[in-house]
Picture (cartoon, rainbow, N blue to C red):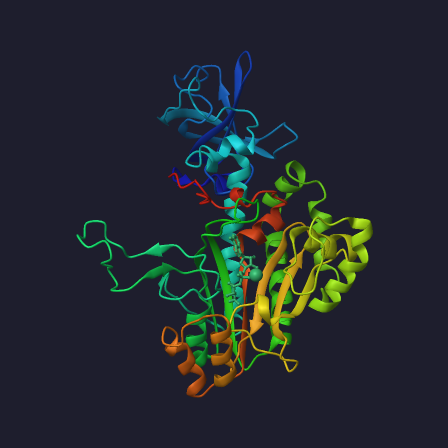
Length: 453
Ligand code: 4AD
Ligand code: MG
């Protein structure tokens, strides 16, 4: 056989097979009369070892980073690292890479430096493992919902609503070529979506159980953090005939299933992160899998934090009516419970208009899931299904009724109790890889003052 095959296939071919592979040189160790190349093409974590004989060692342009085509015979390896290796008989350099000015050098670069070369960093071990895991988790998301009777729906990226309030939206639709600056392509102000939820509710009112998984955009003022992106991906299931308990149950099952899938399908990539990124990664992950997540109300959370405050000296004093700060989240799921924590029933005043008002009239049926290391991973709620209460909440939150008449219609005609949540995809990737900065979980991160390539 003389077929081109992936490195992954090549590694599992039998000894004495004649094969041809293509890939990039990951390292080149040159001895007196023999050379060892590590070649990979992204199909697997560990490269294929290629033995280069004395005659081939001086192939011009055979350097770190170059793109090569190699044919030869698979043989038993005497090295400890691999069972087989490729004895090269022909080496062709398809694309050379001059080492002297290559921004990527065969050494460990800092994450800060790599962020300045997003077009080259996918070639590093860290980022190729990250993006293989990202790919696997994407597919797991679809499988999870497909297995539970959810329909995949595609919600628009350009919208006319700001579902979460706070106007943290990017404006779109103005045409610079138009003479009148006020003239918009859409005849009105439009935005990049901050969440597909409202449109997912439209679909759930017909299809029952739906989910959407796509990019969302936020122009948050305080997003210079290691946990915020201006463009991030969100998984948003929406279920008719469901309540807040269903949201918590499904979220927990969802998070655990994604983790198990990564452990099973990306064992080598995960081992890479456990070795180089975070040596406590596997125990942190297993701790989440072992046992049920904690469930506490917002009031209980505030009580716990208030009691802890004198000793913990939180920068923000915990106070009923305020959001949880990062240090509060951290204390709850790392310091106090040491496991994922659902915080439910938050004050109505600090939450968006669409959440279902509880009987007390003061709180809404919503929940945040806090995960060790990353903090808030999921936000969800039961949606207000009573038309009058919804209209009142819209007035309170300054949401114009005529702007969202279509959303109110869902309650006027065949309203159903329904609920859903949103999981921040990159926050999940941070957790599963032990990565400190969300900017290193997505290929081309967008954040304040950064939109290159
Ligand atoms: O809590 P959020 O704002 O909830 C919603 O948007 C709801 N409409 C979701 C729903 O019920 N369908 O966002 C959901 C999750 C957060 O918990 C967080 O993990 C992630 O999205 N997230 C971000 N991730 C990265 N960068 C940002 N700027 C993010 N903002 C939210
Ligand atoms: Mg939230």
